[in-house]
Amino acid sequence: MKLEKKNNSYFVKKKKEFQATPIDPAFIKPAFDFAYEMVYGEGFHRIKRSGGQLNRTPLEIFQNTFQGKLAEMVLYRNLKLQDIEVEEPDFSIHGKGVWDETDLKANGKFICVKSTAFFSNLFLLETKDWNSEGMYIPNHDISKTAVYDFFVLVRIKPDIKNILKGVVEAKENLWHEIEKATWIYDIPGCCSIKTIQHIIEKQYVIPKNALLNGKTKMDAENYYVQSGDLRDLDSLFSALKEK
Image (tube, rainbow, N blue to C red):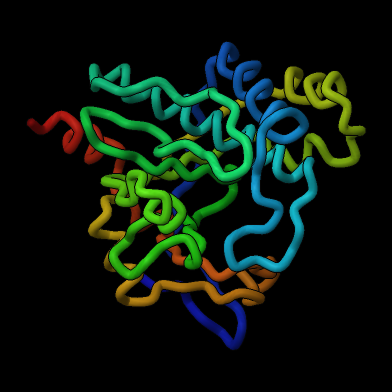
């Protein structure tokens, strides 16, 4: 289902309520160390989103990286609990021009994990990163895995942007705020590559500079799936268990 459009504003109508599950405290420090090294150490992340115009600050990139790695870890744990063969999340530090081939690989299938804050109800993919067949262009260009089999949305609470707002970007300061927070998550749903190909074909798009829910200006053009249109995680488990 497409978003409701009024002039230059797009409104989410199919939502899923956040269902809190605790994040294993043992996940927090590895995700923090990875994100810190990727941003303030030897790693590399793009300053701009694909098709975006705003330069992300190092703190914003750190926030996105930490949240993204937490999302991979909690999905990894969920798959392991289902006795699904899954490779551990990648914690290697990559420089410019090198990145993970996939977020998670389970039972021979490739999974794209997208993270967002707990209040969000959209699964978003920047249009500049995906071709008409649903291939991930950065991987396709360097002859790596270009087609994901499944896509999963993970929501994280608290909103890391709020808890790190105004914090001086010293490692000990960032860790102090993150360590004292109580981290929880939910997984509102998933979809297959067929769904992604469908939304690309039918142009489920929020344009650049449009207003999401009448207030949030979009920095880049994105394909979208509303959380209420995502399938329950059990469908992912079933698909991955198929021989």
